[in-house]
Image 1 (cartoon, rainbow, N blue to C red):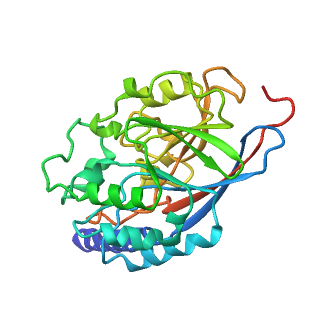
Image 2: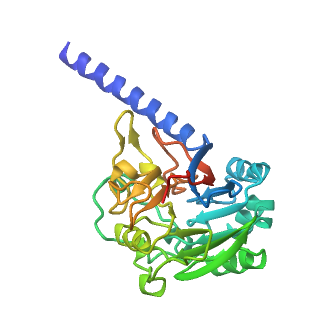
Image 3: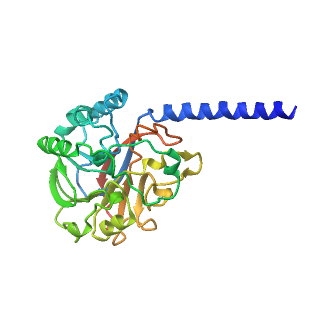
Length: 310
């Protein structure tokens, strides 16, 4: 009787585990568009739409994801911001360009992440849920990110790798600062340090991984908003609890979505910014699962600040 009961219990556990795995694989392909509104613009300005993409992790075989990405053109955004990890395969550059499609005819800026530089490898997925041990995937085959950088530049997009730039977007002037991937410690904050351009209508900072040292500097320098990815929103979350990890030093409570930085600041506080972290559209091709954290792109609608805002 005891052995029979244990066998039944193990069988039930195996069935539950298989069901959860099947659900997690389905959710990783349940691409979702989020819409967020935030007041950032000068009073009287026309609203501006910003499509935030992150962590595509594209491979040639991910046809459904490519088709979903192509469909985002219908949103007709004023600006596209991509916060890295476009690639997950040696042959992915033409795939990425085809999936972005007509979006590259819109003004766009981008940075790269670690998975643009180095090919993904098979790893224990449980490591993602453990504290960061400092090890980085820098010994695998290099990916053709220079080809992607060149192709996006030819289409008019601006790379923000450890540099400042500016673009006219609609009727507004937008000042940008960006850093290379902080997860690999490629960021050179010294190259972008200093007060954000006070003459610009909008000041945006862009990073792949939202490490606190980067967020702190951008907020101190007066950027209206910081746009980031990398976290996958936790990727495996618990209902009513949320993310268990962010794969950086950002706290799990801000693993995705719109927040303030510093976390306890309010709009108008000196040295503070809005922070938008995307949960991203992909995963490692070796662990295509998500739980309570659907893959996403975000359409940010930027509106004028209220009359009483500083």
